[in-house]
Image (cartoon, rainbow, N blue to C red; front, top):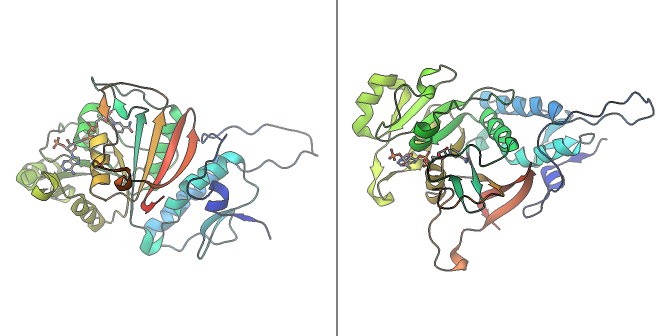
Length: 322
Ligand SMILES: NC(=O)c1ccc[n+]([C@@H]2O[C@H](COP(=O)([O-])OP(=O)(O)OC[C@H]3O[C@@H](n4cnc5c(N)ncnc54)[C@H](OP(=O)(O)O)[C@@H]3O)[C@@H](O)[C@H]2O)c1
């Protein structure tokens, strides 16, 4: 029987590092010598299987069976059967925690932030093109394609006017969600007008009627600000409302304020923090968590690292201490 590489074997347990692999698809070397070993499968073969897994989860279908090149076994989740190249193995190891969320475990919140060594996501003038390399952008588009919804804050929607689609990879566009309590994002922002995917707007109840006039009642979620949370919305309420819309696998893409609020309110299961070897100085803050008085209190999640081009991706399991 062909060997199976589980996530732990392929990617290492928490705290181990996979070195020397890039997570961008590379063209296999061509050979006409029949004595050469058969070409290993790469990311081009892996990615459609990842999309199929996400689709099965969305539709409530059973996982891909164990005989597939990327098959499910009870207790271990998905595993690669041998003959894959190093890039595909690294990508699988990175994505396995997400791919394994199936059935009753299919509700999950994963976030990402690309930031500098000094924890900035843009300069003080808002220039963010680009903090990270192209591999990071491909990774973000992959996460969009595997999740049901992509969430951004009003700051990102105003400054970047993003499309939040999957242009850099094959795969479906997720539902787009903008957290904009006071409706400061312009009505003609791309996410509201381009028709590429559904968009939901999360706003303060005071602005619900205006938002509904703009977008229609079915696209507006009203969540009050909470005095106990310093005037922020309770993100658990946002997550619950999105689940009522059938959106179980949520991707919080940015920016820094929004992702940090998800971490502070304990509403994020996983964080991909992509650190670029650049120092910006007093820019837009990236990840900002609650202050610790002592190192004993500091948040120290289980972590793995993956090279992503010239950047380093920290895969942080916020449900498991190191
Ligand atoms: N490097 C990356 O990975 C990445 C990703 C995305 C964006 N960006 C960059 O990030 C910058 C913008 O980020 P940012 O941190 O300034 O803003 P942001 O996180 O995009 O948006 C923050 C705003 O969203 C609303 N919001 C989010 N969570 C909320 C909550 N729990 N309760 C109430 N309101 C909530 C608030 O709007 P109100 O202020 O209206 O109340 C808040 O000020 C841009 O320069 C963009 O290019 C970088």
